[in-house]
Image (tube, rainbow, N blue to C red; front, top):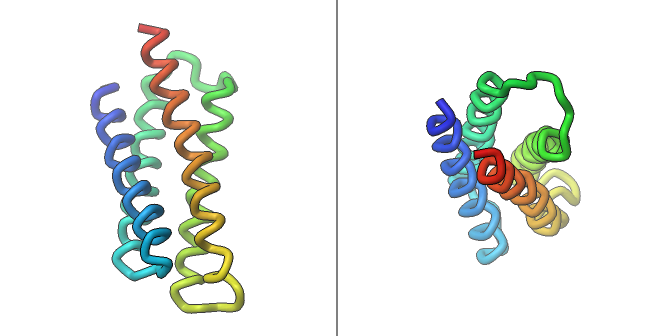
Length: 122
């Protein structure tokens, strides 16, 4: 079961990284990037759900779980911001690229801490 959760988290990593860094390089948000953001968010949500269900300590708050849930919330905010930015509503698009790197960094911290915990606990 852990392997399935890990699979979804790796797809989330690939999707989210591709969307964030392509948007940053092109300096323009495109519809396909939002689709990739959505895929990343869905895969992260599925992976998080699977990991939660196989966890022995369901409601034990750790640094990893706290950062992980925070990162998932940031991803959701980032996705909403992308949807607003593509429609060029206000200054959303102007600040989107800056926030993208911050959101990706927060998410990456959660991803890496999960790997470290997985290695240490095995």
